[in-house]
Length: 74
Image (cartoon, rainbow, N blue to C red; front, side, top):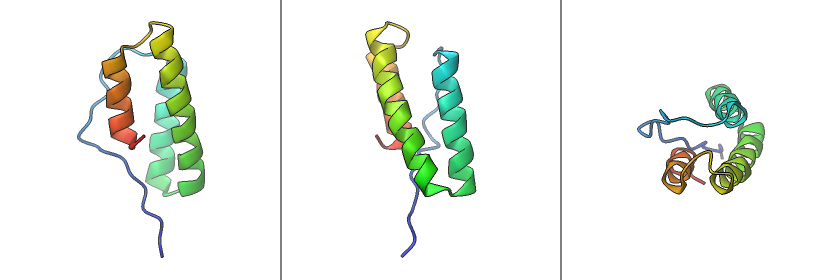
């Protein structure tokens, strides 16, 4: 049984966010393309925590966080 990775490519993340979060997303996308499910899942966890922190810090809106979560199935 193969593990299927999830990413919704219809959701575009074309808004301002910190360089740190943008890099996490870039790394997750690279892992997705490599079909590296273990590290992809770890990166999704980092994206979840970091996007919550950016909402609390006022860097992104809650709606933007929802878009990120929708893209990665968080």
